[in-house]
Length: 174
Image (cartoon, one colour):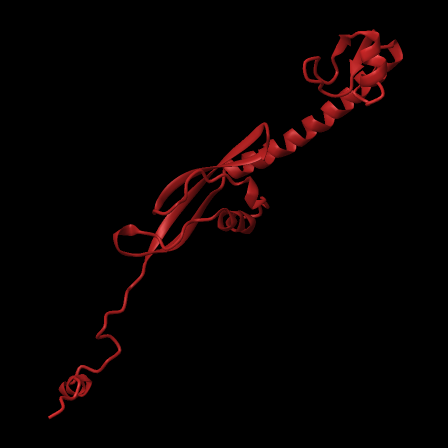
C-alpha cells in the first residue's frame, strides 16, 4: 500500500514522503491516527499545493526576520554601568537592558531572543547574538562603559574639629 505521510513517523519517513507499507499497518494505524493518507493522484496534488503555500509563508517570515537582522547588525548600542575599584561592575548587563536599549532605537526585540553566553561583568565591547528565527541570527555590537563610584570614607560628613574628636571618645570612669 502506498501512503503519503502527513507527519514524521519514526522508522518510516518524514512529512511529505511517499512510502510503501503493509496494508494492515496503513489501514489500521497510520490512516486512522491521521499520520498518513492514500497516495492517490488527487491527494498528491492537494498535498503538494498545501506544501507550496506553507513554504511561501515560511519564506516570507524568513525575509522579514532577515530585514530586522540587517537593521540590528547596523546598530551599535552603548550602556553605562557603575563600577567599583579594579573595574568590577556592580551586577551584570542583562538581556532586558539590551532589549530596552534596542527599543529606544526603534527595534522591538523580545529579551528571550537575546543570547548572552556568559555574564557581562566588565567594561568593553561585546558582540551578542540575537536569534530572530531558527535560520536567522543577528549580531549586535554592545559597548559597556564604566562609571566610577566614589566610596565614602569614615571621616566624610563629620566635622574635623578637636572638640568633635574628643566628644566622640568614650568617657573613662574614675
